[in-house]
Length: 111
Image: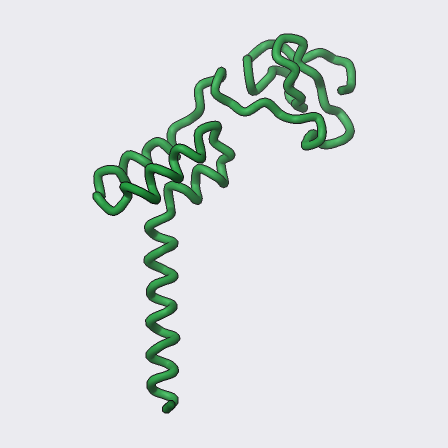
């Protein structure tokens, strides 16, 4: 094998990886933003993203904000230690004044 054929092969692999990353942008954003419906976004993107229209739909869906009731509840194991607060309404754990899951004011006790 010559150096030209090896560099051409590596360039081709690089282009394919870039195209794959561009194709999966909606899924990458959904998982990065920890969307409640990220698996559905990935499924739509992976199976029907090639149509173009579904790729745009998946992208808009990934960029849209979750409704307060759609946010995934935080598990106690995933909660950071320190000044975390427990939501009396839904049991989610957070560190702000209001619960991200349901919008109720968080309990002042440590979780």
